[in-house]
Amino acid sequence: MIRVLHTADWHLGKKLEQSERTDEHEVFLNWLIDTLVSECVDVLIIAGDVFDTGSPSNVALAQYYRFLRRVKDTCCREVIIIGGNHDSISTLNAPRELLKYYNVHITGGVPDDFTEQIITVKDIQGEVALVVCAVPFLRDRDVRLSVSGETAEEREARIRQGICQHYHRFIDYISPYKARCIPVIATGHLFAAGSSTSDSEKEIHVGNLGQVCGDQFPAEFDYVALGHIHRPQTVNRMNHIRYSGSPIPLSFSEYDDRKQVVVLDFDQGGLASLRELEVPACRKLIRVKGDLEEIKRKILLLEDARLKFATWVEVQVYTEQFIVDMDEQLEFLRKAKPFVERFFTRQVRTKASSALNEHTEEALALNDLDPKEVFKKRCEAECKAEEMDDMLDLFNEVLEKMAQREG
Image 1: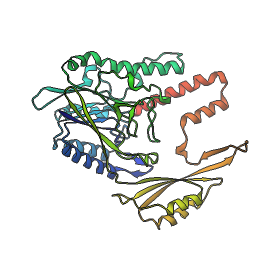
Image 2: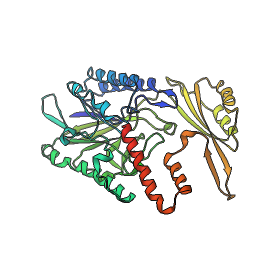
Image 3: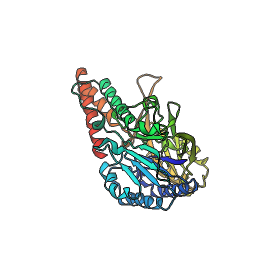
Image 4: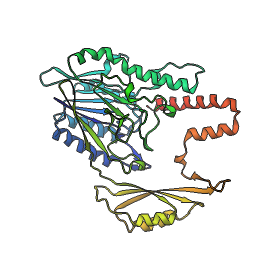
């Protein structure tokens, strides 16, 4: 039997506005080291987005390397890491040859040699006991050729087809292992159709292009370890295709999520058991909405979660006019709730529309604006109808190029 732990979307270096999350990540990494030992894990898989940005801080890098060194003091024999859309290929791959000596296998991006994505894991007798197809985030250039003049629908179909073809290319390489009853795992960092997202995921392909269904993965894979979606879930009710989710809540939209890792046992050529291990929470995130009086009532009802770190509260106040002294009013309430460290405030202006039964909301925080929606509205105001599609396609291409450059 061989035991595997699947985790993803650490986002080391992540900040919530200007608030650091380093201490929360350190608590998780300490817990993960203890779990590798207590669960006697043989293989650790990290399915992308190790870091929050393509240029991680020295603190985030130190945290990452310190963790990998500590893994070698556990029973875990192999670590397999793939790049996500937030990760820099060059940053992940830079120490690749050195870390390979410590059985840490890194696939930051699609390699020139396709077979370098295939990693064999041996048991203590030296026999191959598991095969991992370590597929990283597939960038646009990895899965399709640019075609001039194609429609949005054609482009979406081409991306989806390219992703599926990439996974199906493994079949010829893994067939000899399957014939010997050796289980095969595939990884991925992508958006699967039907997944439930939170506010903190960036769209991988612009407009969620390229999303694939669970049944489009080859049946030869005994388990598909996915990253990118921060809420833990299965894909299309297929128990062996899963997002482990992020280990800490990365935005206030994840305030009620149960964070977890997945522990897998492989025996007699297949997946023998699957368990979800809950990651203990160390900070409570709370979101409250309403008008100012309603917000005040809700704050007074807050209770201490009694966790390691103080509570953070996002406050969304709906108001017809900007409230100048809102922060001062909330700070007065916070003094009665010493377990609350700070409020993340946002005023949302409401105003009646031309129809009496409709209302529109205008976010007063700049970071609420979606670049694509802003650009679309500008095009509607400035462009002719027949020019709209070309302008939007061009803008989407620019956004995707920027995302790839960040990665």
